[in-house]
Length: 581
Image 1: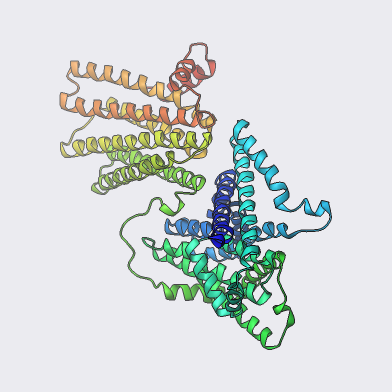
Image 2 (image 1 turned 135 degrees about the vertical axis):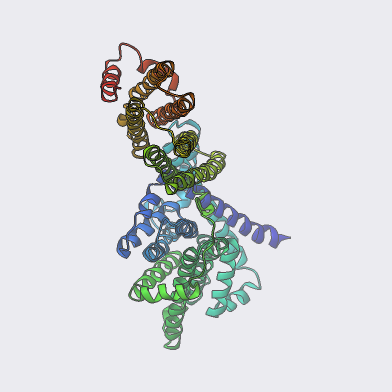
């Protein structure tokens, strides 16, 4: 019972606090990054030098090479990143993850008071107090995220202290020397570390335990090196678990991550065995916490230098392990592997919403074209675009609703709400495109011919609809609030056009210049045009609301159309003249 209370429970408790603190700190860092680093990653070129530092930077930001690899798998699986461009990112990630070990190594500092002040155990309680105060009293999301980072780091250090204290007690056990004897076999130490890391899915925690052992004394360099190598291999398990349901290139990313760590470990083990055979004394010397951090960093740095010249061979090996084959027929819009990375998930939803916007614009322009230049291929294209837009709306809507249940910041919550509103309008615009397409089919099949005046009126209104659609979508895609202000005056002009043209149509009916059947088609087209302009108005208002959800749409529109608003009136008159009938 004494062993349980003084050794086992403190060790388990320390490991639990360590991993929880790491998770809290990583979440805070990730949220503060705001998706910016991930957006840059998607733009990465084949330049491995750039990719290396980018991978290292992102991993430092989120403090998890496993999470970074899962993110890579999701991006490659979604087709947002090429498999061949992941090499530098992976190598940089392996180096970036060593920062944790260096931070923890400060716990071994002893000496003058000003040196011991650098010990995390000294300032962690202060950081925890500051972090809690920021959580309670700060109004800014950034400050709250920073508070989370402080709290997470303090919990992590507390867990590290518990593990270190438990290791001191463990050393007193009779069987501890026997356990250390097994670690003197590099292969066994490597396997133990690999399996343990695979089970807890955290190389940082394994490295932390190794450093705790080093702090308590009793392990040598030749014991620590295989333990560190095993932690690097075991951390690949997280990505391996996520292989199911991915395409071949995503699987190759995981093979790449696993291969670089295995090949590097084999190389380092061979070097270590050679040094043992030569009787290098440093291997049998006790290692300190800083030594563990050095081993961790050197392994990943040397591994990078060794593998860069054989990058193409490594890529071919991954392609051999995961050969080309028939791809799955389903389309992946949003990969589940990026769901827990809220900034990246929202960013991807926005990117796909922009794709959806372009898709619905193509549907409208194609359907308008059919009114004058009918073709069966054009009808099929509009139908395909409308179906695709429906899929976007379904996938994005479901994904965004799920994201909204996450712990979102105020800005993130506003961004999700804006996207949810926007996809509804884009989907409705594509529905109107299909309605216009149906009108074009009816005109063709019934050989309906409009009068010259009606043709001129439809052409003018069509041009206005294309104009407002371009303005609304371009302002949404580029977050251009100034461009969005030009939408509402044009929307009012289209409303006026519809009213005017309906009156003219009635006059033509009364004079016998138009048939009732033709009039139904004409009116239906105008109605769909007017509805499209209404949705464009909504989209423009969402763009104007992008920096604040406090903008009241109805109040804004009433104020905009106020007779004293000279800018609106000038724009309205200009568009009225441009699209005069």
